[in-house]
Image 1: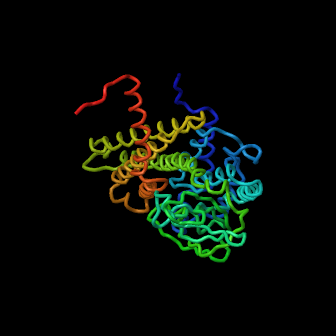
Image 2: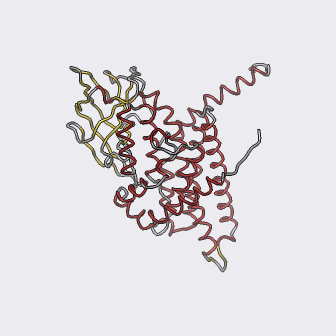
Image 3: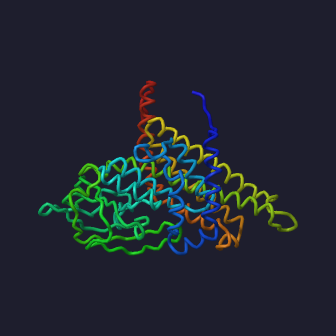
Length: 397
């Protein structure tokens, strides 16, 4: 099979168009303010809604412009590269795809009408719990059906944009909150109903997409508010998790790339002991390692997206990408901060913001320890099978 690592002319033009749009609508001074204010202005969302970018990857029957996953990755990486922040438009794609795949015609229409009008989906996704984390079957949020109505109880945390978006998609167990119960469903609900309490949860980074804690105290739902097949909510979201890991790496890859660019430019200007610091071996080693990390992560990202485009399984690929990329890109941003010295530890540069965003996404979407657990299973299986196929003798001790 011939390997082609080049982007198409259309993808190159898309990068240029995204860069120009971001320069006009998301300049640095606004990005700084949005982090301080925990969210972007409505006008920016609406400006995004007026572009064709908002429709990329969405099927034509829903008013979209179909494209491959590689092209989506190009758009996501460049948007975060141009702004040096994890732009909410990017993560919103995950919610849109979930509704399109599992929603009823009425739910899809409501979601897409809102999305095209406002530039943001109506839903925030509520999955994680204070004591759950990656242990999804350890969740204790549950529903009970009483007199034809669904009653929702429990707590969710780390709900991205949970304080801003007007509706929620909630993952909850059916009837029984015990660990043994594997029947999990997705439910939609507006936030402004009795029994829902939303609390801000402050992060040290990535404040442009703030977290919230959400408490559900006997929230009454109609059975029609379920999203997807009852009892299959967790399995439905598994595909979301794989693509989410690609989305996360695309976002922080863009930020880390910008951090390297800033650090290299600074190293070429900063004078110390009579010469610019780019001429010192220690700095050169850092810059070279940063470039290698970016190139390797980018190769892993677009290979994984290419496999998605060709309907190939990516369970191990996505886990390896998240495991390697999140750690490597955090180091890239950390080295950029180091090159800036004290200036990097201030808000006068962008590298500190990139570092915090990258470090946060070592946790979001699954920790590196969980990624190792996921990736290990197919690795061991594949090589054990290879040894068996080649007739290698079992080891004797």
